[in-house]
Length: 213
Image 1 (cartoon, helix red, strand yellow):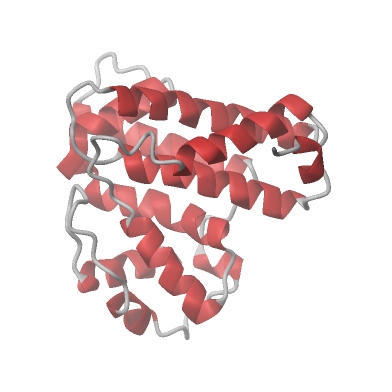
Image 2 (image 1 turned 90 degrees about the horizontal axis):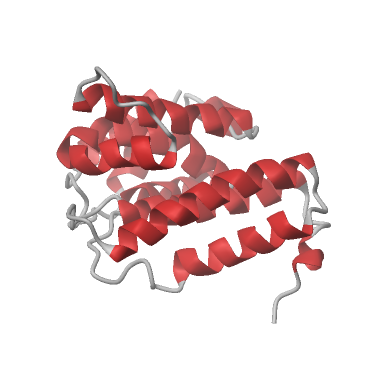
């Protein structure tokens, strides 16, 4: 049994970081085949919208019982493997952040917040139908008179804007990673996920890291 009231005393930074990690886990599961309509992706879309709604509510009122309980349930659903059924998952962004954390001790959720928009700009063309769906179904992007690329990129911009809205960082410099950090060594230590829409190379990960400043 989990009691949401126990989370009231969690500092805002840690609450938002943990909730964004929940969103990240759902996105990492969502952005993978199959691209045909499926139950797992439909559940993921509902969960992502719920996380977004309730992060905002919990920031506004840290003792909002409904928001805290919803975020707790969202976190459970993000990791109990239900939404992974029938899915090829990504989790390359998590692989990158785990290594960043190992080398720099940065906050996990904040590292993910910096990485996700940059990473998605690198891979969206390889999973364009799903990124388009993410934009319209999760962020409410109006697809009228726009190309698929424009719709997908608008969804990524919406994610980046949300990250800033909730006070999460968007650059490495904001989480204590400076230009002297050996990003190449970190990049080459990352695991490569074979089931992502685009199988990365260590050099591409290094380029992503450089773009995060």
